Every structure is written in C-alpha cells, then in structure tokens.
Length: 154
Image 1 (cartoon, rainbow, N blue to C red):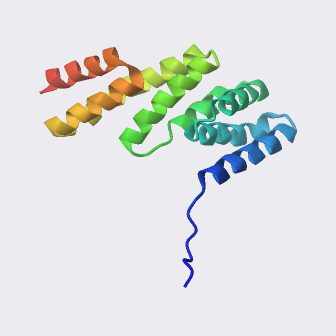
Image 2: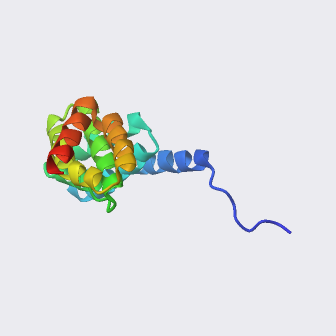
C-alpha cells in the first residue's frame, strides 16, 4: 500500500518562490501590487533567500510611498509573542540590508515594549532560555536591559 501523504520538499518551496518572484517582476508596476510584494518579502525571508528579500523590498518601496507601512505590518502580524519578537528581529535585519534605519528603530521599539512581559511570564529556567533567544535576535545589550527590567519588576 502506498503512503497517501507526500513529504514537502524544501527545494520545491524554493522553486515556487523563484517562480512567484519572476511573476512579480513581470507584473505592472504600481501601488496595487504592494501587498503582494510585502507578502513575498516575508515568505522569502522565512526561506532565507536574502537577495530576493532585498530586491523585492526595494521594489515594494519604489512602488508606493506607503509601502513601509505594508512591510512593517507583514513583519508584525504574528499572534504568538515569541513569533512576533522573532519577526521584529527579521524586520531589524531587513532594515540593515536595505538601508532603512526606520525599520530597525521600529523593530527595536516594538520588541522593547513586548519582550519584558514575555520573559516575565515564564518560570526562571524558561526565562533564561527566552533571554538567550532575545540575545541572539537583538544582541546582548538588549537582552541585559530586558533582564534588568524584569528583575526590577519583581
């Protein structure tokens, strides 16, 4: 008997993204395709296809002056706090890659407002893990500041 479930091939996702990117590049320029470009940027970022991320983000920003809001919204839409904080880290990285300090500032501001509550909500051993995650996402100084804020709140 044959297994009815076919495993997902990571190469297939990459091929699908490349195909979607070619379709986006062939499309008509204009503000109406900004949401599609923003979603593509996020999907490509999840697959760590950095050149595509940078190119699509720049296309998005060239299309519409309101595009920064669309890109920020795509990176901040996760519901779980841990996923959202990791997405802020990705937005911070994107800001560095394409020379947008406003993206970096937005990511750090939002992370600073949410990270202490996320860390404080865990037991002490889980807090250490969460602080390590924050350190890998935003740096040691950021994680130390969050740790200090959590300790002051006790």
